[in-house]
Length: 179
Image 1 (cartoon, one colour):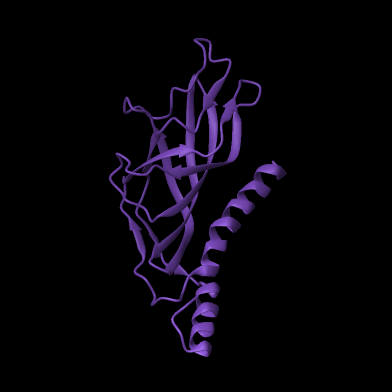
Image 2: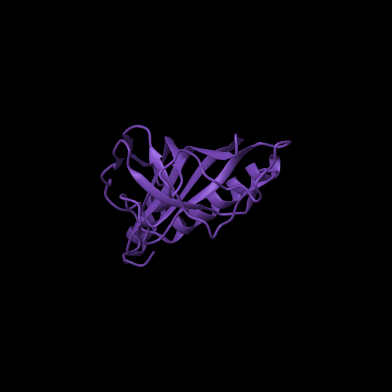
């Protein structure tokens, strides 16, 4: 579990590191996702479940580029989720959403809690991810996409972006537009 938390922290830090090269921008509009919005996602890392270890926390999901979902998220997003193998179906519940929206050299950070659940291509709640008929193991691979449906409206305000402020101050001090 500590290794997953460290990996999550490392990935979020990596996303935030790209902000060091960005410039400041005016306060962006909130990121709004309506109730029952559909986001097509995939796991970042292969994840396995068994009857002996049916739960996984802090799974990392990424929205799929050019996805079939009805919501277009910003360019760089991570979703944390929990998974539970239950009755031959894999239940996946999203916990948080963190996005970095970029526009040229400018960026905004959006982060907050979300409530969304996974649905399979057949429209059923949960995922058929069993490796065998007895479901002795269920597996999610990065190559498999599935949809997450929001349980309620989600509005995320842009977060403070200290890197953008620092870069703006540097540009003003040097009298140029270069970050």
